[in-house]
Image 1 (tube, rainbow, N blue to C red):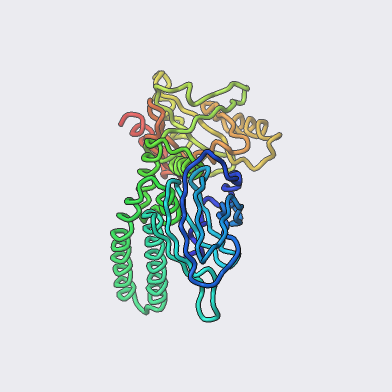
Image 2: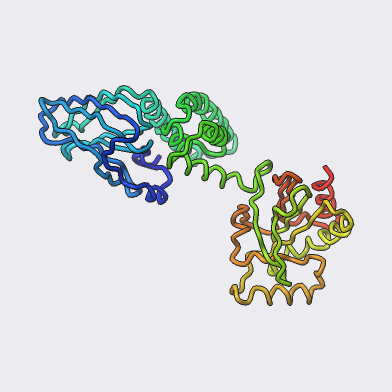
Length: 382
């Protein structure tokens, strides 16, 4: 488990957030603080940037071991209270909070500074989930050590089952807590940091839809939505990203121009043996549907091992020498389209339905011309 999970959110992207200054407009925030140790000076409210450095947006003087803020923040974000440069307290704020904080204010030789934050159920729940996940990570490490030391498959099987039961138990423990945070920033950070494809990952998509429906448009909401959209690119049921590429003859081809038709996209390269072995089956499929105006084949040449200036001539010679004119490929020079579709290996094929959504996807060579052909027929007709 990584240290200080409060701030592990879209590292490298938060830099587009601008530091805030105290303004009359914005989201209200009230904080009533009490300090138990003898600390004097100022308490600063700071907004965290991409390097985990706080930018001061307001301040309050410590008077009689107390401080108060009645201020505004520009938008939901990750903040901290800096108590006289002696103690910092992390805050996940949506705006509108009225917090009560009791803090030590400074450490002592035998005790680190602690703080209790009340007034935000979402923050409380986030911290609870974080502790749950830290405990789970520790238990998994212990189990993994036992697995590595196991002498036979029987013992390993028992440990695998123990892990699966532990995983299910952890899901049942934390998922209701994450869902209870609604569309708050704490929920976004928890879903981003703690959920994985095999651990509640489906809720990330559900939360994205909730954020869109609620009209959440602050920085973290927009970045979460964008991240989930990118993660879903190329998955069955997702909207196929539009693209415009050029044929060897210089004709522009745009995916969205074929809306209302079934489109088969085949990502390939001249050096790819499995791609070439699949072409006879693909040729047979194109011949079957050559008179069907509602079926389109796009052979997208990508990941070539030549410079961009040589790309067109290199592919043109390959098509001529191999007799693959049936492909009439479009050129993904620079590989951007393949990367947008999440292609990591070729051949990679996608079937796009008439509504512009991914209907089927597959990769690799199926072993025979007939297998490739039959798969294409099944994709188009079922």
